[in-house]
Length: 151
Image 1 (cartoon, one colour):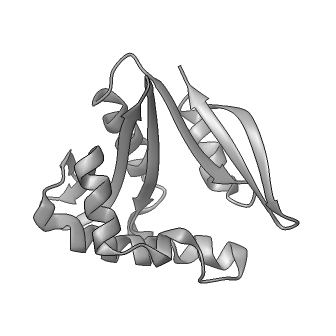
Image 2 (tube, one colour):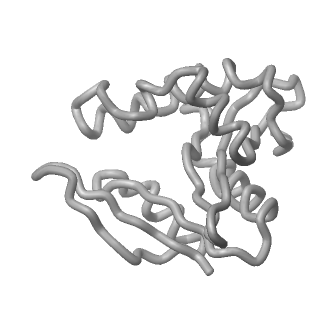
């Protein structure tokens, strides 16, 4: 299947938010809780992120959004977040492609993102694409955030 990765438009934000709610169900299952930030985000929150930085979308030939990622820059560091791929399209390299393309939007910068110790697939993806762990932050006894960077 051929996909293209392009900049999202404001009119795409509801579809991206719907994808986010679907894509983060596996993350919610890891934590045995639907009370995780990606599942509580509103369209207004996403619009604020859209205005602050860049939102990319991965689309099929039929213009169906199957993935997305967003980022913004602050003081020379690019903060990457909400990298997601529709569950039916995972393990095909689309997450890596989205990550590579968002980095191209901010060349020559330091990139930072985070995940949790429970998200082993995400950790492997990030390390495979050149990110290294530089910090950890315990949130509670079951949850530790891992911060990764790429220079």
